[in-house]
Image (cartoon, rainbow, N blue to C red):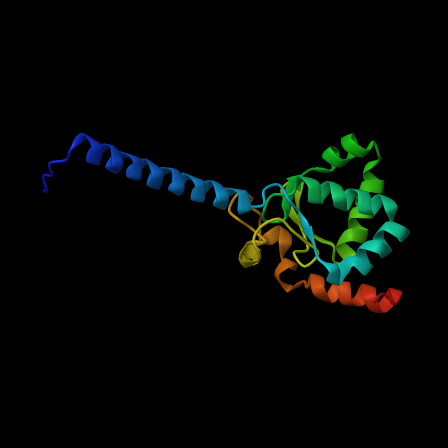
Length: 173
């Protein structure tokens, strides 16, 4: 413990110095917060040709994809039933199913079963909403539980391979 005797002028200077340090620390914290990019979605240039193909050839499927991207969490997942899509788009279940299948078959999304609902996971090489170092958590973050029994083939699927097949099949660059 140190005891100091200060004049009123010295005390005022010390107090101003402490306030200055506190203000500088707050400014630094505010600048760091401003650097963070909240509520964003980044799309990767590498797969813009696939996006153009989808928008040109399957407009409704691209609408569904953008709905999923808009509502997905920061791990690229959205859990919902078909009725969410039916209500929003005012389309029949078979139309929804057919267009989700286009998205899945061509590597835009993966679909995981969760009881009577599904979890839609957007290909992290197409779109991402978090820092790049968190991509390894793209599949799950603990908020969504899915059954391995209902999703046996998911771990063996490769969205990249499906994108590659789409590029080759459609001659995309």
